[in-house]
Length: 94
Image (cartoon, rainbow, N blue to C red):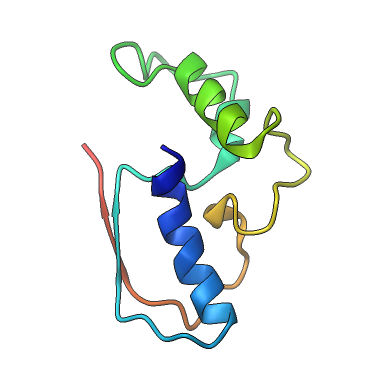
């Protein structure tokens, strides 16, 4: 899980340091730690990746529970406000 979030973060960090990338390939990525804060899941996540799994995954990755106010830099790629200049991304989900 940690590696999947890190792949998008590497693209953002590379961009910030002026290292060009052609593309990103993200397969089932963890992009937004704020998804672990949702109380209403409308019945989703009952089989494999449950809301409890999501919270556990983000807590392990961040080293603390997720919070709405912030996340460590590059840890949650979806928190980036300006995506201009980043390479195109293919995101695979089921």
